[in-house]
Image (tube, rainbow, N blue to C red; front, side, top):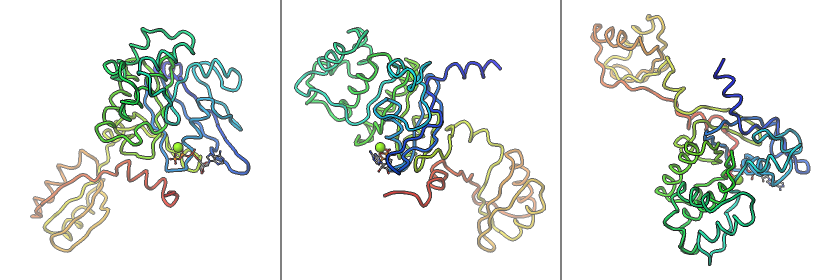
Length: 317
Ligand SMILES: Nc1ncnc2c1ncn2[C@@H]1O[C@H](COP(=O)(O)OP(=O)(O)OP(=O)(O)O)[C@@H](O)[C@H]1O
Ligand SMILES: [Mg+2]
């Protein structure tokens, strides 16, 4: 009970049946999801799925046609200014004065926003690893450094939700890895909920605890990453054995073991699904019956496979 109450109260972003129509086109269709404090969530979908449109609505750049978004305790519809105060984000490439230093850019922003201090500038700069580059002119910054300066700026006013639209676009692998690290720190140290959009599942898997998958503006699924898979009691194994026919015959008689697929005669492969605890007895039974096992591998349906299935046939190149 306690956890239920806690999780309800730690929700910092809530999309409630959000729809965006422009003319006859529905860009976002009845989309609902929530995010809790300190969580990194991926907004995942192929090109044209509606990620940027969703993000624009969350940061208040465009209006919703239907539904509502709550940030902290405030509804964007009823209390726009208060709601928006709790969100920070980078939508397109952040614009900076390139002839000025990173520090001067942040100070410029500080002058325009209420309650931001120099101490906060130092704090956010450290958080994104820019403290040693603050005195450099922005024109000398790499793309990754500019991105991080953008994140620093978005964090200055202490938002509870940070929204980043494809933050790793154009970064090299080292830059992507760095960005990942900074996001995790932001989420952990500041307890900020970070929503990151991407069309690359592999990238999301490495930084998010959950992914919200959308396609053609609609919610496809919300998935936790990591934990669920490990606790799954059923496993699918691929076995390479000296006698496929005999193996099939033996295993078809075993309760709780499902033969999924066979290939080859004699020496060949067989796929079976069974409970984790049953594996030793199956191996013993085969060995006792004179079947040699050359390979035994777990077949994992990766989230990538599932993602391809969800978005199958609807990919826009
Ligand atoms: N102002 C607009 N008027 C009409 N249609 C639009 C407008 N903006 C976007 N769209 C369309 O809405 C759909 C969703 O666009 P959106 O930019 O949100 O997708 P996305 O998921 O961010 O895609 P990408 O991965 O390419 O960035 C697309 O089909 C796009 O062409
Ligand atoms: Mg986009």
